Length: 97
Image (cartoon, rainbow, N blue to C red; front, side):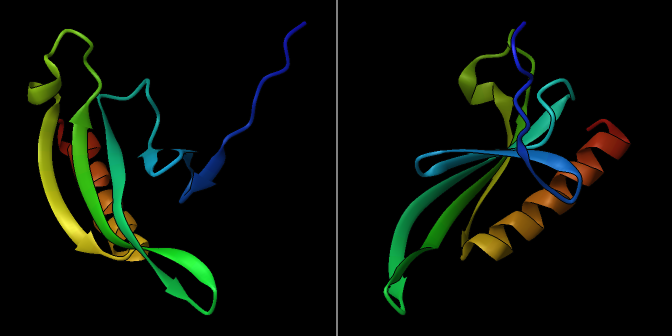
């Protein structure tokens, strides 16, 4: 019997990271947030995200990759990017953009 893998969560939604890319949200929903870390800076010997691209993406596999991107913005810092991404995702899921 296969084990069910638990994902990290942020504000109750799955948060999956692979290298410098993160996906936030449930892939079964209509939209997810895609975060791409574009640059990093060193703070007290630790690499932290500096510039982050935030994209609100439709999960419809029938759409072309370009059409899946509903909104996009570049933010400074992962916290700011996650904050705007969460707001976009909540609005998109509530209003069915």
